[in-house]
Length: 197
Image (tube, rainbow, N blue to C red; front, top):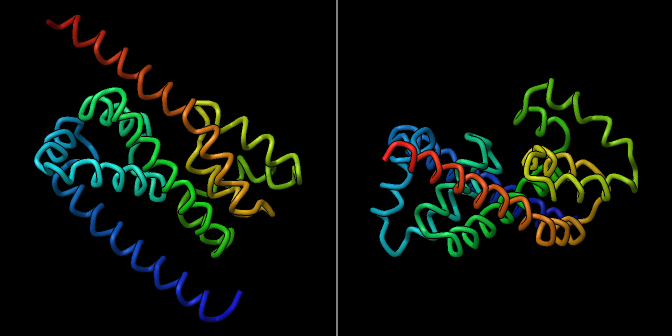
């Protein structure tokens, strides 16, 4: 990789992290990361920019895990409806997944350890020893709605997997997990609401 390319990647990464930090600080202040209602109100107040903001929100929460992914998926379905909500969830989560992979690929295990606690790293470190089998295990895990997807995207960046293969696995396997979260949690949510009405 040329020095110019590295400098561009570093500059984009720094700008992305600063932008994410600003968004997170704002989000915490406005409680959009801790309150489903606040997130919904924030998105509705954004008007035509709501889809773009939501996609950004989903991408950021993959790169810097703040809240469980299921909450964001549920919010997407509630705010935008099942079809559009699923699409916006899918786009945002896929973008965030690729960003996490590229960050790990460029900055290594020290960076991954700074994002997640050491216990999580130790728990999945053995996956790095799977060699070519890692790709298969990774794809199976991404299919599952209960796997720690965000962390596994970072972990994949520490392997020999190329960005093209990673992106194909994410694009092909993510819809199942996102659909399970989006529609499964929405079903539970609407069922619980009906109990109180």
